[in-house]
Image 1 (spheres, rainbow, N blue to C red):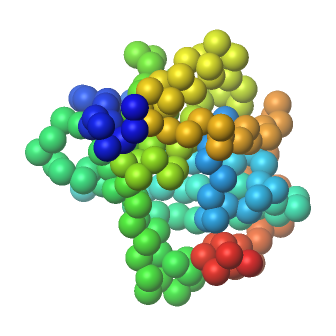
Image 2 (cartoon, rainbow, N blue to C red; image 1 turned 180 degrees about the vertical axis):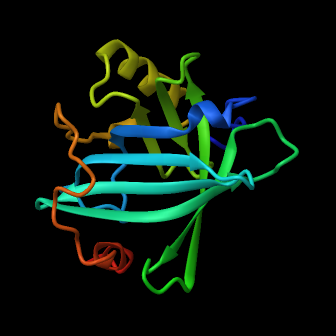
Length: 187
């Protein structure tokens, strides 16, 4: 069934506080927003006093840490559906072009240990986990759920994760988001 035939089912009553913290990217649809050779990709979320969420996306490419920061917020504060908007400013050091994307939590387990994140367009998909490695049975179940929601799961690519995640500042930093700009222009 395609996305036009039925509404995508989204998690209801997401506990944002429990959702905060670090998530490791286990697999995703390749995106022009990320280096193709990125490894150890992860997202760290922190709840702000005003109810919005600070977002830090990191990846390591060629031994260098690349990152981008943004803000997430509920698309509709009155809804109990886990439909968020994520806003990044591009380029990060000259915040003039806000890029806003949909971030829909399609599935999360009771213990908030793994999650399936998508978008209404079906062009973006992420499988996230609190650990750097995910049980194959859990992975297969999440892939199946994505398929049911109309995603072309053939496009999923696993993200390499090392057993010991890198520390924040042990790698030289990329030139402040240049990779982000390059990715926008498809270079």
